[in-house]
Amino acid sequence: MDKFQTITGVAVPMPLVNIDTDMIIPKQFLKTVKRSGLGANLFDEMRFDKDGNEVPDFVLNQPAYRNAEVIVAGDNFGCGSSREHAPWALLDFGVKCVISTGFADIFFNNCFQNGILPIVLPKEQVELLMKEAEKGENARITIDLEKQEVSTSDGTAINFEVDPFKRQCLLDGLDDIDLTLEKSTSIEKFEEQAAASRPWV
Image 1 (spheres, helix red, strand yellow):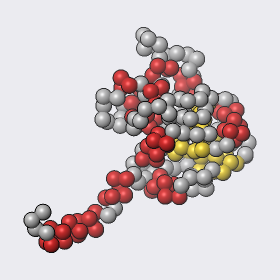
Image 2 (image 1 turned 45 degrees about the vertical axis):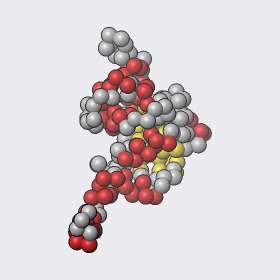
Image 3 (image 1 turned 60 degrees about the vertical axis):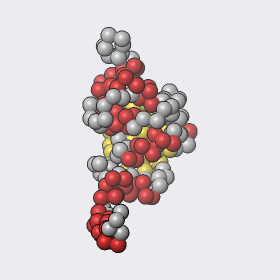
Image 4 (image 1 turned 30 degrees about the vertical axis):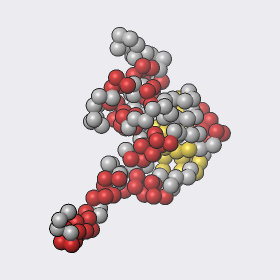
């Protein structure tokens, strides 16, 4: 997993509430176990019509937002069925941070395991960032995980809370597997001792 770096760029305004995992990556794209390639189908049913053509009005199809790394979303982002493909699709598209007033628990935790920072803020602050995001290329948002701060192009700074352990894992680029591998020497020593003391196992 890549280390989380400070992000500065255009944010995508997505005020719709209850954006569920099937909207993020529809069920027909869940056949793969690879993390790459899913970005092409992120928000597929909103981005494309039935013939596969882009829907011009959808925000991610607008020139200002095609390369955005941050989404400012409505409440309860990532609800619905549990599917790790949802953060995979976001990350593969280039999204590294989602800001909302609330997230579904499983999606929230899956984000941290895949290098995405989900930020929970009060409604008033999300609305402020949503208005900033609606300015498109005329406004840029900075996400500083080290300082735990979101700042706008006019200098407004908003602090956010994040679990200290999850924060450090993102900064270091460590998921659960990476954390386990850091203990490989101790694990091997334990296995050797267990084999010697219980050879029948």
